[in-house]
Length: 224
Image (cartoon, rainbow, N blue to C red; front, side):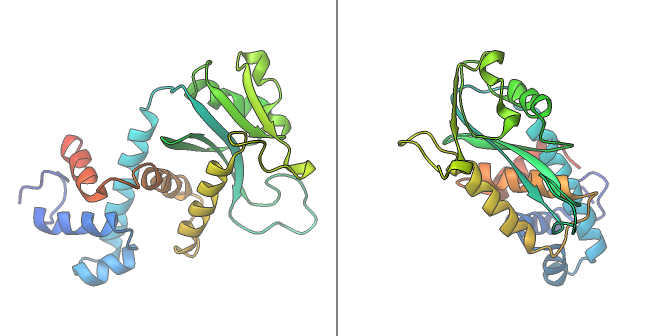
């Protein structure tokens, strides 16, 4: 059976499109299996393959210029007793860079040090960009790198915004959305966490788009 979206699939194209529809609606693999009649293992394999395509497309994006909010967040297990500091215990550290009114880019990082975070900013935000951050030391030195328009909100001093523009409310809203969405999976394995995160980024960036049509176009151009 010919399938333009998945060359190796034994599923008919009609069935495959139905599964893509379920993915676009953000149904879980279990829910999709129940209504499609396809085994959950097969659905899991297809969903993982789709997430890999989404991740590949995300990495192709070029640096942008404009107004950005930068922040880091922590996902996963609760803190381990006796361990302190950012990312203590088994938490995953995720860095996010949000271009206001356009999109967000997220990346799992090994630490929240300046050399790590600033390398990502340099790769994603044009040097003429305006950068908004909190007071974390990982953002010290951005001006020295050439980002002369770096503004900070000192959360530690009770600040959450300065005027209309100086805030990081947008990226913080994304963290809330991402954690709420991932919670429905009742635990995401370490091996698949980044793919789920990338999918969440994709959904946020295309929240005003017909995801079903967008996914079909993506998979026609680059089949599984």
